[in-house]
Length: 175
Image (cartoon, rainbow, N blue to C red; front, top):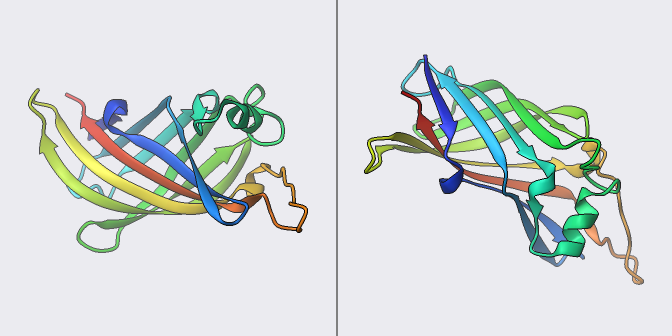
């Protein structure tokens, strides 16, 4: 059984939310951890776990980040971490997989399905074996209790319910 740990310096955990239904606001988490365990070269038996510190959320706007950490959204004080635990990792084609698992935000767990593109495995200049993955999917924030909403004077929605997830991940094989 091989164990892989996330290489935080070469990984990005990002999300996009429509603002005023005309543009996307992109955010990310800067503190996170992930582990992948697999005994097969093609990762088809992979068990994956991930967590992020809610307090590390960043959208390049301090006021907005503060709002996201508040009770209206993530309630960071009560729920300091969000987490994901895989339930299946199935190969769809050569380098495409379907990852299914339980995502927990604000103490609410829901099964989510994500698309994974395997980018390959390489050995870095320091002799570390690394595998790369691009992970994407969509969730409805209201499913997880992030229910704050507002409308514009014209009746438009300020923040969409749909959140697009995108993770660019490098995993380091542990010796």
